[in-house]
Amino acid sequence: MELNEKIGSVKNREDLIRFIFHLRTDLQNNREKWGNVTLDDYLEAMEGWISEMDRFYLNSNQPIPNQPSWKTIADILYASSMYE
Image (tube, rainbow, N blue to C red):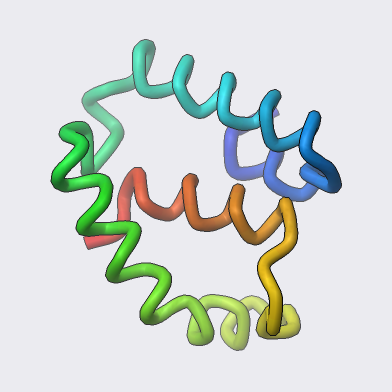
């Protein structure tokens, strides 16, 4: 299962912990595929994606979260790996 497919299974804290493990493993194994490999770049991308995330949810026909869920956190962490 691809990393982006694992996001849909994040429903609780344990799922998010497991997802973060897979995210970290993906960075270690596929660093060249990541757009943001330094902490500074990753956090800058996270800031940008969070400020624009309503568009992502609208474009993917998902409700815009009023309050972040465990899945929303996984979305943010994953998107920050490549958002520019």
